Length: 370
Ligand code: SF4
Ligand code: SF4
Image (cartoon, rainbow, N blue to C red; front, top):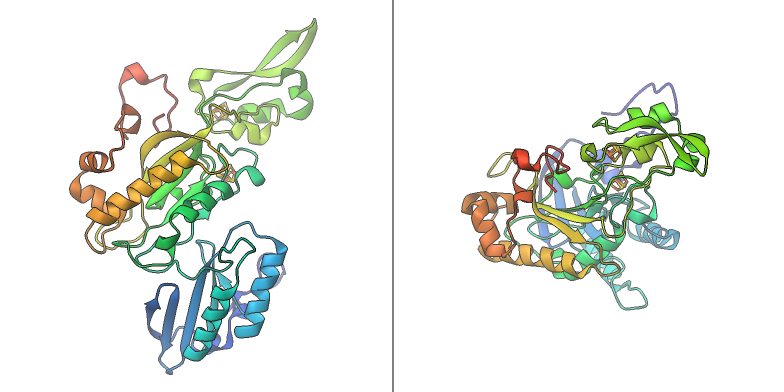
């Protein structure tokens, strides 16, 4: 519903300003939609109007040159309109089939110098859509892995599943580069999550100048940080101490205090989770479960990660029933069989409700057992 009588210009502008005319004219009066082919949808309105959508994969972090090219395409074919999906696909919409054919041809003809598609068409239906991901090493301060790099190698490997409808059901993949998970990892069919495995270092000499000590103490959800004093070369420093057995490597303290860095070449890496979804079809929405507790960071091509994901995708594709999401399939055959069929090693790290006192000193949240 249009927002009227806005009293400020704070926040995003009213989305109604950005709708293509055919969508504005038929707002709330759509009869049905269908997927005509991978990457191409049609929505039909009560009035008989049609909207053809062509969906393309994009990199989430894009150059201005590429964004300008997208705008040129929108100007040429779509009266200047385009939209992005939550999975970082870009969608171009036109109001006739002929325009859609010309648009798709144009998109598929645009390639980078190396020959790869700039705007590959796909990402719909029973295929693998573009990967939603977080900031990674490029931008954020607490990542345990890269996001753009891992997404690039995974999608390169699974490209034919993006451009086809060959899976039993939609497969949604997400990457979050730390346990804050500002991606949608908790509810994705396959989730790649960056994890730290060592407590923060403490730069005692600088801490009191760079940080508010009470803030650093208050930032820790497990109460592992406390005020302290140390003497270095005969000089006293006000600082903090960290009770390591309480630390779950979340990085919250580093967010508040740059003198508590926790990135570590050997300690950082990736956990793989599978089986989450937000759909109600077949079963209730569910959270993803940890199936691989640690994969090392192996830039630039992350071979262990891509191989492990490819294996899960192939076994699921061959074994699941039509319309069965990855988590539905694993629950139907039983998680024990999931591990048997994929050949993934099952370890105590993967048990959700692990409560053995012998392992209380392991760092764990309610969801992750590392
Ligand atoms: Fe930053 Fe964590 Fe979000 Fe990655 S997942 S962008 S490290 S907060
Ligand atoms: Fe506390 Fe998290 Fe910092 Fe560990 S990393 S000391 S749990 S805030």
